[in-house]
Length: 475
Image (cartoon, rainbow, N blue to C red):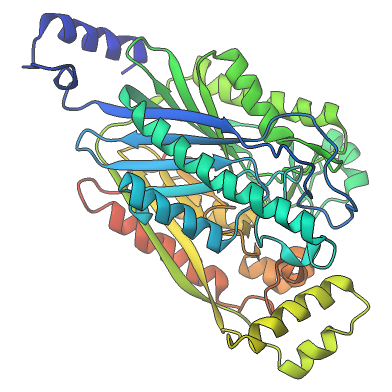
């Protein structure tokens, strides 16, 4: 049903009283109506703290291109089942910060862990966040700089809790619809040298897998006005590498959409783009260009396609699986690395030795977060922790519901790169080389893809057996 016809019927019922039997405003809602609320808050540091994402930086931020935002979308189905999607213009968050946020939301808002998804855009032009990518900054930060980061994180947490409370307070009858578009600026960076991309693109010779889908979830109020739009894309937010705060291309895409639709909160989640870059890159003009292209892809879905209305119930699941590492290093090997000429190897080794000496031995597994949401009979939203390569999205879409399967990476805990079995075997930066920058002791074990995909299927099955079966695949 189109938004106009849906709300025409709702308005007729509202003023005629037919089928409502209402004595209060809250009762003047059809039993089949979803509710939604959205809010946003700027989280740009006011102090020139250290930036995250690039090892080459040697000083804190010195300016601002765009604000950095935290945004919340609260969805509530007709039965009162509620879920919160948080999107953050940050390179990532660590496990401790994620747990702290969720614990406070449980205490203050009554939200269980399976009702919360925390997505980061992975912009490389935001602040250092807690222990995320700690070896990059280990030994570089002075005590005052570390304190400034800690103070920002404390204030940021308070902002996020207040943000969710605000979004809950804005819950109102809404029509929720979904669709899928396309944007093609993401390039497989493992298969295409950056300098060769322009020519290869013009010749149609780009190599390697990519995911160019742009999932779109739209929320409209009783007047048919767009109040929120959630969208995603599988590509690194690495167009920019300077010293000015910026949401990179996802930030510009959100700004474009909010300017195009006044009163709308635009929320971005990063897909499985760990091996995908926006190419070419390195200029503000290109970041703005890619942002416009992504916003245009979303608007094409919103304005020119028949979007699918969401009906049924919201069903959410969350679990942490013990994801195995490869063989752990011995203490002697770690001590040898502590004397390496590579300062990042040294930083990781010192952190691991501090952990061991503090009485916490290295563990053979990591508590890896996986969640699955069935948004009525609409999208299956799967969220995976870490920097997930594109193989996961392509595989899960093929095995589940095609473009109706949305796979977000960089969610809940960004602890490392997450290679597929193929990429792990090929090696390279995404296959294992980047583990040093996250402070993990070694590479992942060979069962990584099997373990993650198996858990996704288990959760999808669990959220699909309450009332509806898994929706048919949309091609």
